Amino acid sequence: MSRVRRYAPPLVVLLLVLAAWYAVSYLGLSPERRFLLPPPDEVLRVGLLDPDNLAPLLDGLALSAEVAMIGLVLAFVLGVAAAVAMSQARWVERSLYPYAVVLQTIPILALVPLFGFWFGFGLPSRILVCVLIALFPLIANTLHGLRSAERVHHDLFTLYGAGRLTRLWKLQLPGALPSIFTGLRVSAGLSVVGAVVGDFFFKQGEPGIGMLIDLYRANLQSEQMFAAVLLASGFGVLVFWAFGLLARRVAGSWHESVADSPDR
Image (cartoon, rainbow, N blue to C red; front, side, top):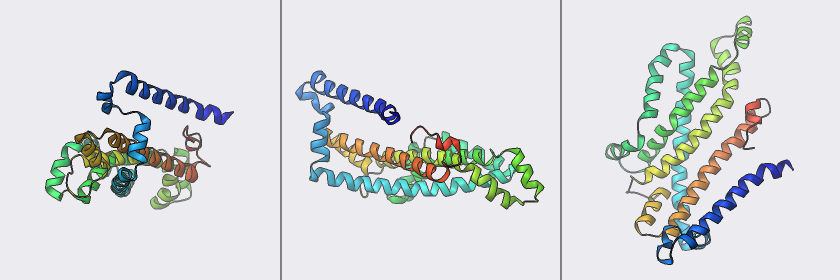
């Protein structure tokens, strides 16, 4: 019964969305204008079941996934390192955190053409977009987790004469794991968005899934375009779910905020 209550609501919403999609395609649009919203079965048949159309989509998705994951790994390393440094010295936080906030408020995608001019239109520029767009959630969540250790625990470490590194390694970092994974899940989705949307601006080199979406839009190949959008969205959901699963494996057995996550 608990599984029914968990999975029934999203399945009902999915069926309603598909029903509305079919209704708009067949009842709201004439056959001449149906390319604006092709029905789901046409998207599946033309975009995903035709090998000639599926192959470039998978190649583009693989490239975008590579860019997103490399960018996420670099953002994770930089973000956690910056948060650890901030947690250990207030002057470091006062020096770096304002610029992290500024980085969050800058429209990164507006800077994409500049990155192309400076670094070219290949893989490094695409990765840079993902790093910049995914960095702040990791810094903010990791710093919050490192600062969330209870005072009584700090007092206990002080009583036993623990040094700063011991306190960081055995108290602050383990306690910060749920917050770090929260930042990872948010940043993973942002990194995928950066990889896909960044493709719209990088018109040179091997095409990612975003470049294919723009190409299909220009050629009015709506079935392939919707298939590309669905693949990109599915990859984003898969990444979000994978990091949620990893968080439960690592911290779910001892931290209630992870164990009680609603997406279990």
